[in-house]
Image 1 (cartoon, helix red, strand yellow):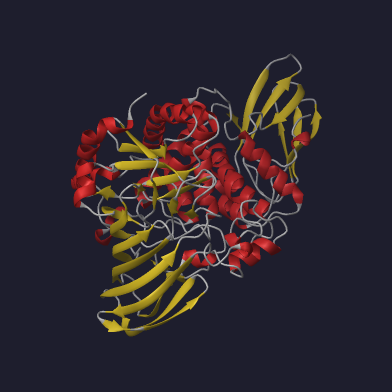
Image 2 (cartoon, rainbow, N blue to C red; image 1 turned 30 degrees about the horizontal axis):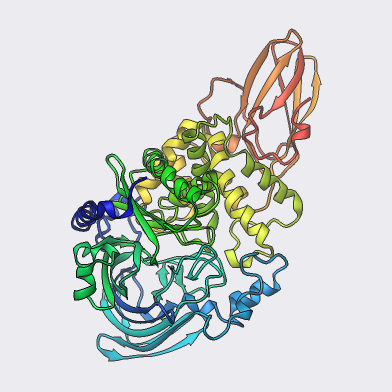
Length: 612
């Protein structure tokens, strides 16, 4: 087993290289000529923050300078900050929602309501200035409402200076201290974070337990913390030689006092996350023609857990290569996999995950969270509005990565997602994918919708336009919309441009309604076959006919409103217009049986009538 202290010198070189060779272009210089919508704009901010952490009280003091560029055509009279840690207080919206929803998240339940004053989380803003002038503000739950001294004009750049203090909550959901695996600090959503303003207006949503949205920009962060702690997270470490990379050497003891200052820079990201623990082991592994991977995990875990983390490392390299090949090249020079979550959660250039359990679980959560570096971190959708574009697309590609890397050889790696979605569609609990994430009546409905139905959205799109076209569409979507906030229409337009087909109907029916797909075989009469559309959602049809002589023939029935056909080796017959509930065609020989969608790539909610 590789010894922990063995590679300080090499780690220092690696961090120094990453820090001095960032390749990511700042979003302040976003080249709209590369976008499909030349009128697109997005806001930009640059954070400079310094905090002083007390690892005994779990409290910290911070300063923040934020340079904000208003790239919108609008005059801004207010700004808003998220204060996410305020959710972890008795009586917060997250607390009350968890105690009143029919099926509470088992990780939360009523735990927030039982936190003592020493266990809660909070962020207190003590002063805030705009261009040096004091401004007024009001804390409302997890949102800071700010009245500006002067409106921010289109194209104007202003500077906000803030002083704040905070307390890290006992970990209940994602962030916090002393989680169930003993990680000291999991610092996600830990700072006053400027809310997003886009063509829809402000997104100053309260934190009730779902996902996030952030403004693109550059971060410069200094964390002063007890010298015994090692930190992993977002950004390139700027001073590895000054801190001995967290090791308590005699030289550091004599010259640095009780604390070390960790200095990170992160270009062109929309969040900054870190975790720290005195027992972190730190390994690295280089991805060929890719980033340096960092692994932070507790070295005091049982032997089998430590062995799993070693086994994970070459597989993580394969995952990074897989996603770079099938989506687009990973655009940063490092990525960190950090033991620190209450499951797994994606962040800028890193993930926090659980570290124990068996190898399959460790690999699976890593596959999912790493895929989020593309679907949400580079393609930064508004997760509260379109969680399915984040979780669903990630689930789609992570199932394929596990299938291929672990050589499972499944015909349809996304089959489980189809089954979950069909269960939901029949349950009476389903709400449209356009439902705001906090507004789902049931947690179960939210989870199946965003993960499984979002997964099926992509998998079934491959059925509609052809698998090769889907692969091309995913790459085009990434290249056209990376470092922006794409919307549902953007993936559809990428698919349309690749396939030449009209696909607006697919987005409308599958994402904006709860219409279901249900096609059936109605009758066979000699060499005449009649099919019927029972559900409201239209689809093109793949089917296999078995003749009485035992031979088979594949047919393809285009959907008329698609204005074309996918590439296929099947016999193409006449279009089926949606308004017609039945469709009859004749074959060259007497028919024995007919099977609609033999590969089960269509999310038909009643497969019993698919064969006769």
